Amino acid sequence: MNSRSTTPRVSLALPVYNGARYVAKAVESILDQGYEDFRLTITDNASTDGTEGICRKFAELDSRVNYVRNPRNLGAGPNYNLGFELSTGEYFKWCACDDYLSPNFLESCVAALDQRQDAAVAYATTRSVDEDGAQIDLVGSMAPDMTGAGPALRFYKVLTELGTCYEIFGLFRRDVLKRSTLQRGYYGSDHALLAEIALLGSYVHVPEATLYNREHKDRSINMSDTLARVAWQDTSASNKYSLEHIRHLNHLIEIALRHRRAVSPAQTLSYLFLSEARPLQLMRFGLDLVGLASPPVRRRLRDAGWKCLSSLQIQL
Image 1 (spheres, rainbow, N blue to C red):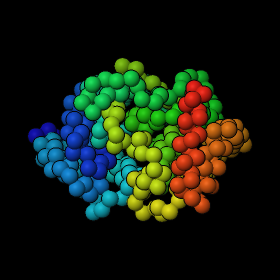
Image 2 (tube, rainbow, N blue to C red):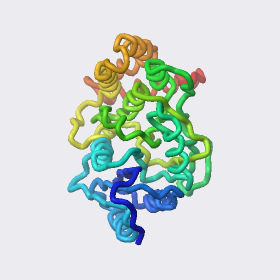
Image 3 (cartoon, rainbow, N blue to C red):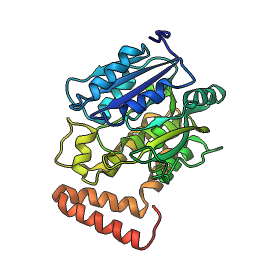
């Protein structure tokens, strides 16, 4: 039985729902970290597979693990927020139940944040692996280089150049996250949160640390049904409409105004206008509105649009 400080420097939160296939590997990679001053809280969204038994066993064997079972499935967003609300300490990290970490992840990221007081988040190099853990080509992309960029420009670069949001699994300064809006009830709110973090501090890439991101058919990123994504993100949200991109825009406007003392809202909103006035974004807003009248029509138009862009080999 491992025993550690009751007030560790690092808190980790692992939200999970029916993750029995991969969650043991995720937890093992956390417990195998060279840096040991942490506490892991697993928030289980009322899983119906073997997740509970696996996680309770880890909690019994290692005092650094705390298992919390929600009475019902809250959805991913509220469950992510719950993990943060239960955290303590100086640094915080979300962990995905199907990913795993290199043994030096925490040690390297803590050192980076200790050295860079201006940094709000330290993120690792992401490598994609398949269902069996074999390395494959990276799915998506990592954060752009923001070296030397001011807050508003970092905000803009996240909006226009960051797509896959692997950096949400970086190591954050907990006091910065406390100032943020956290996750919201629409799919893709993690992208807005990462833009908000860019307003509040720098990003620092820690190349020697690795996040192994598992690609499989059940990942939320592979869900094409927008209404299913609504339910996945927040089970209390209305399933009638998604309006992902319109809600994302509203969230970003709120963020710009929320941090007006840190960054001029005129500057932030100007960059926001530039990012949202791009043709692809305008098309997404249009699809959201079409979805109000007919989700099936929206889906057909979206699929046709993607096929057209793919045939033209347009990079998004």
